[in-house]
Amino acid sequence: MWGLGAGTSLPGLVAAKVGSDVTLTDVSRRTEVLDNIRKTCEINNLNCEILGLTWGEWDAPMFSLQPKIVLGADVLYDAKDFDDLFATVAFLLRDTPDAVFITTYHDRSGHHLIEYLMVKWSLNCTKLLDAFSFMPSCKSSNLSGNIQLAEIVYNHPKA
Ligand SMILES: C[S@@+](CC[C@H](N)C(=O)[O-])C[C@H]1O[C@@H](n2cnc3c(N)ncnc32)[C@H](O)[C@@H]1O
Image (tube, rainbow, N blue to C red):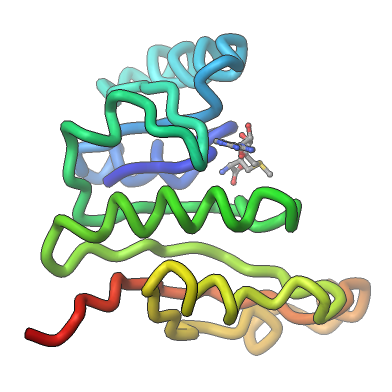
């Protein structure tokens, strides 16, 4: 499993705890974030690979690894990065059969819809879960828009 924008890395750490082979990535030039991820793995006695990978930049790891599951927890928050993120996701999914990108998407305003980026990068997005459907109303009533758990795959051209 690959974590994009891993940051605090909780989902990746859980995946590693239950036995997945995990690679955690974050912005290449933010060495303090990558160091924090490294320390968190050490503290939890987990042997994850940690790599610099900036969305929209073709860092070396992009060309050597073919992840089956790519995880992006809370990575869709700044609309200016969406295009770069999906460029990277499409590149990672394209060459690995059955690879998926699992992400959460909080559509706060309706202004940041990602449909056009799905078309642009030949991706197909399926909603897995509406977070408001299981969140207690005391929590969801403070949040605007909706939060979805989504699965995104690469649309391979038909032969
Ligand atoms: C809101 S945090 C989410 C962190 C973590 N996935 C979580 O759920 O706690 C967003 C993460 O995306 C990373 N990020 C932001 N822009 C990025 C980019 N252009 N390339 C790679 N990572 C980026 C940030 O460094 C940060 O760790």
